[in-house]
Image (tube, rainbow, N blue to C red):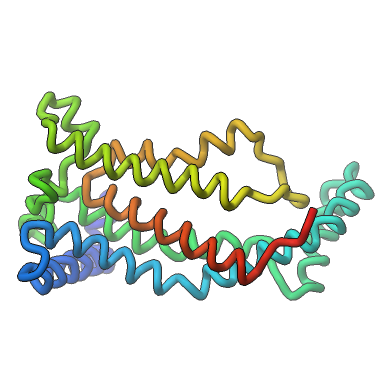
Length: 244
């Protein structure tokens, strides 16, 4: 079943498309042929700005987890043979602190519907029975509906496509490396540990994804990771983690 055929989702997708095209038309006198790409970037910034309160809550929760780490490790030692008791005691500890171990997931969950709507616009050739003009817009001659992997498979990938995607992927990879170096993931005391090698690989997942999605979605990903790094650096200074 195509969920976009549902009346509510179809309406939301249509409104998202109309909004993107309206921004594109508004900034066209300034940004010219790149107006649609700039519109995608601007909409991404608006989305991320709207999620700032959740980012603050996530940073505070991360700070709390680092402060509670010694007590959580103690609970693990005392109840390692009783997982159910360990879970109850862990949740009780968080409740006593007026927090939740799941707060850090809020920004991801909150942006999921918006990303879903945008990605639907980025991959459908028609929206509410109308041709999707956004996909025909270009960035340096590359259609926003084109993907690097798709162009390679079809044998139509030119130098322009390769250069545009290479720059976007390089930006995402550079941000991933900066994130790994500047914002190391603290050791978790209340969940499974992530091996260092696996964690390093996960940092670059978004860069790999960017090669397979439409250019419009790749722009969204690039702007998102740059914003997220900057926001986390600011919030880490505001809410520093407890020393190990």
